[in-house]
Length: 262
Image (cartoon, rainbow, N blue to C red; front, top):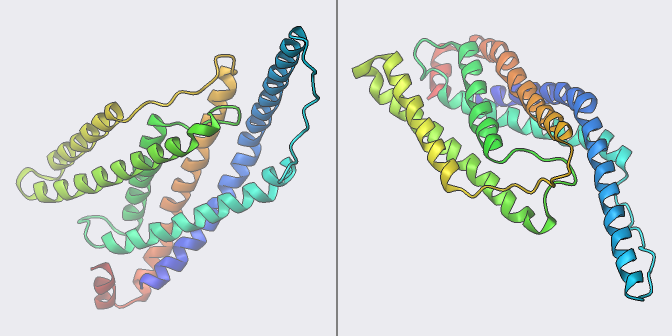
């Protein structure tokens, strides 16, 4: 049963990746092109200013040698984007299926479709939205190369904190349901998750390396495209995986299903 769900999850992940790729190609890539143009213009202005300063000092001005382009922009925006998005979505589809197999049958009153939708919503919030609010995606020309390692580490730390807090909230809700009821238990668990996230946001350092002259509308549209791509992927997983999982459960015997769910 788990193997069947895993295959279905990866297939749905590929489908979600195709949809996300189409969205990012149309909505996101124009913003990347604008950001690259801005970065090029900024570099040229810096080079010109440095050359004028050298001339004022009587120094010989040397023409900068352009760095070789390892991967062309059309390749990045085409096959590069396609491969990255589809592989990323397929991997998340597989992980999504494994988590579904682990929790399926443990959520009282939730069938495969409802479980799939609930997991997708929780995954979108815990894996993407919460870390994104603290450390939002930035287009080219934003961020210093020297800080990329620390920025990456902080982003993944926020994901880890969010996942642990989400798991803890789920365990807390399960323990409180019998005494307080489903609604009150959910409210308390949600408040606990929110409290942990607020503390983490205050404790972790803020990273803001957006140049003052960077176009605000470009930054906004780029981040909207980032959210849209992730929303499409998680929504596709949540809505499309449920019916396939339901069929897989129906094909298997009830004892086998219960064993896989356990």
